[in-house]
Length: 190
Image 1 (cartoon, rainbow, N blue to C red):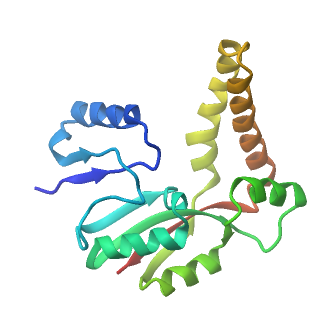
Image 2: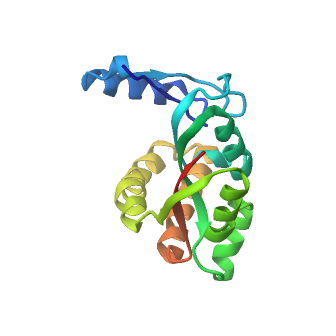
C-alpha cells in the first residue's frame, strides 16, 4: 500500500488538520501522512519519492532551487508536477508589472521556466496554462465572498483590514490583467 506525504509551505497545522479530517471522512487516513515542516529542510533521504506534486509552493525557496531539491528527492525516472506563476505575454501593462515587481519579483515567462527545468536535469513531459476558471471560480470568487464578512468582523483592526484589502487588490489585478499572467502546470521526469 502506498502512502502519500503532504507538505505545505505555510507552517499552519490547522490546514493539515482539515486535510486529515477530510481524508478520514473519505476512508483515506491510512493512505495519507501529513507533516508540518519547513520546505527548505524536509528531512527526507535522496530518492524517497516516485512522484512529487507541488502546486504553487516552490516559490517559497525559488523555482530553480525547488526544482533542484525535488530532483534530489525523486527516484531515477520519478516525476514532478508543479505549478509556477508565469508571464504569459512578453509585455504587460505598467500597473500589472508594478504589482508583481512588489509581490513576486522573480516571476518569468513560460519559456524561461522551461529552460530552467531542463537545466535542472529533467525531461519535459508537458505543460499547460491553468484556465481562468481555476482562479476565479475555485479560488477568487469564494474568497471574495468572504471579504465583506471579514471587513465587518475586523472593522476596528487596521492590521487585519490591511490584509483584507491586499487580498482584494490581488483579486482586482487578476480580473483586470489575467491574460498577461497565470499559473503554468509543468509535468517532468527525472
